[in-house]
Amino acid sequence: MTFFFLKFGIYLFFWSCQIHAELSNSFVTVTTQERPIPQKNILEIEPESPKTIHPENILLNSPSVSVMREGGQLTNTRVKIRGLSDARLSLKVDGLTIDDPTSSLSDLNDLPFFAATAAEVNENSDDIAGQVSLQLPSINQSFIQGAASFGSFSSSELWVLGQKKWGNSATLIGFRQAKTQGDFSFAATSASGAELDHILVRQNNDQQRSQFIWRSTLPLLGSRFQWFALANFHEGGIAGFAHAPLSLRQRKSSAGAHLKIVRPFSPHLFTFEAHSRIHNTDVWDLKSSRDVNSLTSLEHKAGLALKNPLNKSTDLKTGLSSSLAHLLQHDFYRLSTEADGLAIYHFNNALPGTFEGQLIGKIFSDVGILVNARLGSTVKPLPQLSLGLHVSKNSRPPSLLELYSPQTLILGNDQLKPENSYDLSTFAQLQQPSWHAKIGLFGGFLQQGIFYVNQNAFEIKPVNTAGGVRTGAEFNAQWQPWSFVGLSGNAHFIYTRLLATSAPFPTTPLFSFVSSVQLGKEKEIQSTLTLRYQGKSSSNLFGTLNTVPFALLDWLLKIPVHEAVALNLSVSNVFNVLYARDSHQFPLPGREIMISIYTNYME
Image 1: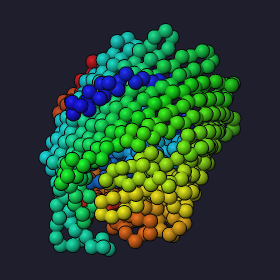
Image 2: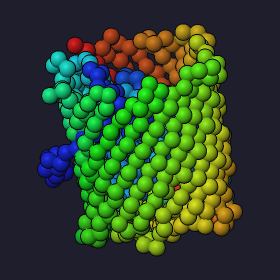
Image 3: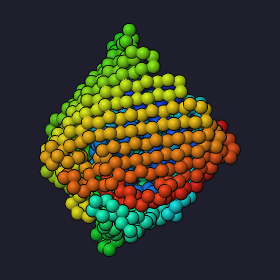
């Protein structure tokens, strides 16, 4: 821990800045491209709700998202958007990318959910799969809040977040510490997935996580300066697959910082951007502790951007940036340059809406030129009805981890080629005072798709496939018939096929849904029941190793004790289902109980 925070302190000398959509006294995190509001999928996060032990439960409120949690609390948690994950999507907070610069595995637990007020899932970013980003609190108010939690498997967590405001300036600081002993029982299953009589224990599953964030905002010389820094530390066991408990251990540490500076030159908005981040992962076997596989990566990026309103109805954004990624163990460098152009046209005639087009060209030192392009439009034929259509072509090079990983758990493959995705999606959304519903359809072709496959009981390897298709539908609805009753539901169906094997995409469930019933008014006692269902998914390229469907029921009770204090009782997997497996065949724990106390003081 001391070495990690020393490394983080040194790393704060790296700095950067990124564009804001507007200069105002209130701060709102935005992604680097504008999108029509109906296409945004923003999930509000209540301050007093449990949001860190199981952060995946927040994102499951988006119909396009599925998650893979590799075991119990605080373990690595992977996100999938419309069946795709890993290096095809990015995790961001306040504009800073959180996932490993050279890795293809993005851990949802690296996002500081304890400090977030909302999460946005964007299926139509320039990443192949999409983007998950967190919004931090507005700078408009001083406050201090925190929570302490205790529960099953000797789990505990403590986090504190505070902000002080001086005029138009503000500083936000937060810290989180969580740990779990982690051993849990699960049912053995046959090759077909049927539950057997004997019970196994998943050992070497203890986990410990620490997070630190710092944000300072300052208006200066007609510009807005904002400094943001984030550090993550994670150490824990890697217990292996359901039938092969191992003695592998993992330690991850990362840090990143950036400075945002926005300068208006009316009517233009000019931005300079630069950032740096570091990520280190160590994997070793307890039986031979001297044999440690390390992977350390660095990324530095700098760029210019200009927002230029051509007229009252058309905005134009252009940008040019360069980045350098460095994999220390192999002394491998990847230099890239990116040129970006985005045009947005707003029309407000008989059929109001927007039309936008974006073209991105990228040059990589190792794989050459890749081009991303997208077109999208949203219209409102009725005040309550929104319709949207989006087409895109995205490409990505293999990550440095996919190419050269020296680790025990993940094997590198230096023969990988870039993958391309061609996608089409459409949606219809109907909004009423007490309810809303949204349905979406999507389809796409993945060329030279990169997938992780099991090599044996404890190693996975990325490989190119001949190609694959995916098509599906997603549905989301919320209804509040009375002030004390709320109903919501999300359903996600996706059909996938690999052309080479006629099997489904690995680790992609065919069908999943989440539904919730909430009883109780806001700021009063509330009880919420949530049913999560995940259908069958394949764990290899041939469709011969599959998980069985499972359904889990969760219960949350929130009790306000005082206007500044609340108690929470959370029970995951109420009926103690022991045969559930994630898509990589990792067993999931049975019943988990957490009790927490939350406090919030607003100045």
